Length: 207
Image 1 (cartoon, rainbow, N blue to C red):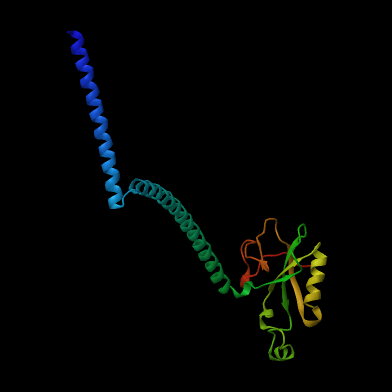
Image 2: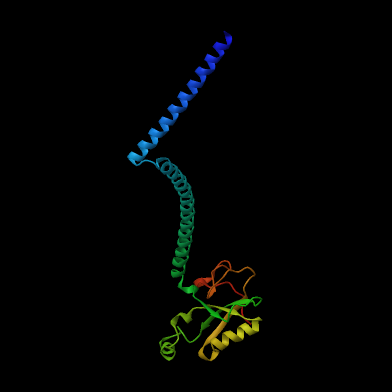
């Protein structure tokens, strides 16, 4: 009797499993048929591809945000440099007496000498102006000259070669630029300390 019950139970379980399998197969076959009929057979692949695409776009968006922030910082730095250069340009435009003349070329290890040169034939009267009309009237005031030379006598000789004493040029003052003195392209900036009259630099008397 118990054997009959056990056999009936196994038979019921087998029939249930068989029914479940048949139902599962029918569902899968029906789903495939619907997908083929509606053209959605690659819907899962499409969803997966879109998910990957969204992940890639999000990563790219994060990268673009970082690049944009870096570009904004660089633009801000460039703007600050431009404003600084504009301020320096305005200062130079308002300081016509600080025109610098350069003699020689900057070479590593070669000292730079700062001199003030004037012309005794300029600004002394109408006759002198007519006699030396080819000399700029600015030479009536001391002009700053930068010289790259090995020694101070050589620097003085270079100045006199460029601005001959026969034409009225006189070296008023000359001295070596201090160590660490900021030299700009084509001339030294104002930075040796307090300026004298007419923006003249406080240099030592030339011998």
